[in-house]
Image (cartoon, rainbow, N blue to C red; front, top):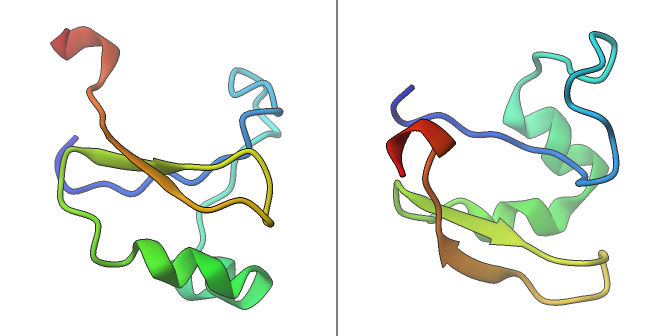
Length: 67
């Protein structure tokens, strides 16, 4: 997949069929406005943090099958 946004919590089992939903990123920003800080993230990078209080850590990211 190219130019995709994946938003997760690192605590939910992604293989659980009830663990994901399709929504507009604006809905996510409504829940947590700090997500908007990642809007200019270049393709191929991920923003992570351990809590809402922590700053975003930006790092290069690949799909597992590309490594």
